[in-house]
Each structure stands twice: as structure tokens, then as C-alpha cells.
Amino acid sequence: MDATTAAIAARGLGLRTSAGWVYRGIDLEVPAGSLAVVTGPARSGKSALLLTVAARMKAGEGELCVAGLDARRHPGRARRLTGLGEFRGVNDLDETLTVADQVMMELALHGRHWRGAHVDEVLQPLGLSLDQGAPVRSLGAADRLLLGAALGCITRPPVLVLDELDEDTTPEETAAVLDALRALTAAGITVLAGTLDPGLAPAADVALALAADGTPASADALFPAPADPGDEAADDDLVPSTAETAEVLDALH
View 1 (cartoon, rainbow, N blue to C red):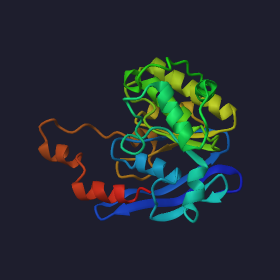
View 2: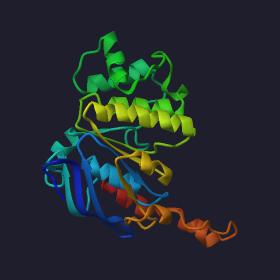
View 3: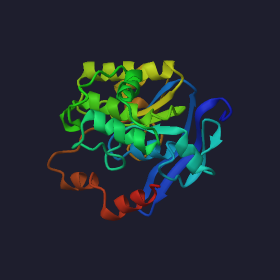
View 4: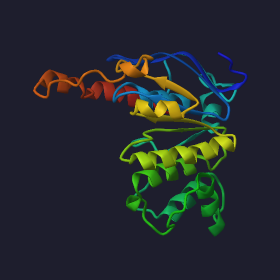
């Protein structure tokens, strides 16, 4: 692991609750200015891993450096080095606000006084051309994802972390999202993104595939054969217990 040159460097990273491992054995090295993706099925620990890299969740073991900083030893400083796109249930966009109001609120949180030009300045790096008076709830999935990414870049962090690249988007929209994220990497921002679709891995510079048990896996092992629809036990396995959910949320900063 070369923590001196990599924007993100992890070795043996793991998180465990009383219900079992959320993810474990994670080795990841992402050069500065790269686009990296983490792929994996639901409940593979993908989102928890992304939040750990962004210093919004605590790992239980292993090493993690972000922009050359020991993120496990200095989580507060690491948090300031990582921008966060929208993670549902963590930093949801306010659907009652307009696009402009959402940007203005985020600017205010970072101590910047709002001027009309600031909204365009926030949206421009991702090539977003949105109706600033439109409510956030009216945005399509791709525009909403990119708005969240733009807000995460307000402080010009060296690393941006986001999730669900392909959620509710068409293949064409997903390709446009990837192009927008590439524009960020061209500007020197390292992007780490999560997706359920292993088919997006070839579009990235670095890819990490997670298996259903939260361990690294080959891309062709990501999705096991679907369970019999009549198999109630298999369906129950997909529902996280209240205790498991609570323990993971307790790890959030």
C-alpha cells in the first residue's frame, strides 16, 4: 500500500457487528485523479465501505489513508478531505427546496455568502445545466445524483465519494454521469463511486468487486443464481435485522 502517492489506500479494512461482518479484507489503492468504482449486490457492505473511506463511518480493523492522511487516526481531518455525494438516510437532499436554495444552503454551511453567480459556479464543474427554480423533488435520477456530487465538491476536496451510480438511470444517463465524473478527475479530484452493476467496472481506472458476504470477489461471482420466489427463507435473508441496522448506524459519525 503506497499511502504517500495514492489518494485512497486501504489494507485489511473491515467492519463487524454482532450480526457478523459488514465488509472485511478490503485492500484498495486509488491513484490521485482517478475514477474508482466499488461494485457489489445489495447488503454486500458497499455503502458502508464508501462511508468509511469518506470518514463518516468507523472501520473496526485495518489501515486507511486518504490524501496521505491516516484516516483512522484522524477522522475529523479526513472528513474535511472528502466530499460526499448524496447518501440516502445520511445526507439527503431537501426535496422541498429549489435547486438554487439547496446550493445556497450548502454554501452557507461552509461559511460562504451567496451571490447569484455561486449557483452556476457550483454546478459548472459537472456540466450541470439545471433550472435553478425547479424543486429538487422534480429532478431526474441522474441530475439529482450529479447535484449531490456538485454539493460535495463545494470545498474543492481532493476526494469525492458517492453511491448508486446507476440507480433509476438509463444506460445513456449512466454514461453521461460517468462523463461528468471524468470531468472532475481531469480537474484533479479523485472519485470513488458505488454501483450495483459490475458492468460499469471497465469504465473506471480502478474497480473493487464485493461479494454478498462483504469480501473482495471476482466480478463474475457478484450475483449468485436468484432464489426460488417461493423460498420464504431466502427472502427473509435479504431483510436486515433491527439490531444489525442499529449497529451499523451507530458507527456513523
